[in-house]
Length: 111
Length: 117
Image (cartoon, rainbow over all chains, first blue to last red; front, side, top):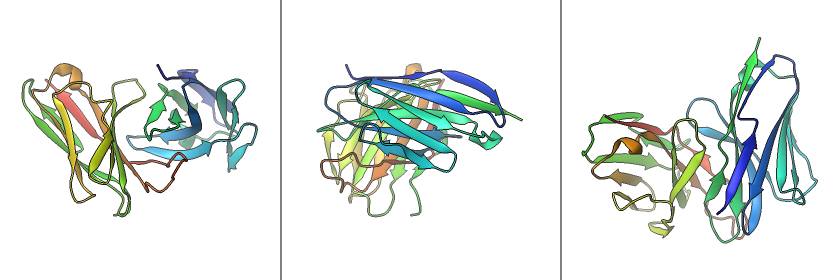
């Protein structure tokens, strides 16, 4: 059965800290790894990673995929209270359009 | 429209009643997806539409769940004889459907929170 696991499930840090969120996957016919941010209800797209070792960056957020280790990390530097959200990781599968999601990491940034 | 819209935003129903949830995808997106998110859980895939047909219904949990899409646009998810375990946020997403062999980025709506009493 295809599976995506995120860790930690919950993380509380102070504003200005750097955080690293982890995602590991066990899927047949892996194609891509996606990260979403969910603040209220609608997850918003952050990154899609398909190639191992190539970092994608957007402002203070960055992510990298390690296909050998079947994992990805999402880094957020100089965190702000607006970064508080649930961060979801999902695997895309060859031959299917559905995404397989992890359970999410709830990140809380305290001022 | 500018984004994916869903209605209603909240629905409270009694056990045994039928409910219909609506999704209006981004204009021009041919692919549409339904997911379910139970409290504290990730998203669980339900069904995928390409145009009006559903090539992947593998996530529908029982025959009480059905979905249709008309005109290649709006989709409705129907749950018959609702049970308490159906309580969740039902999220709809759409994508261009043009990614070919690549993963198509999915854009999500705000969801419908369903509560079955």
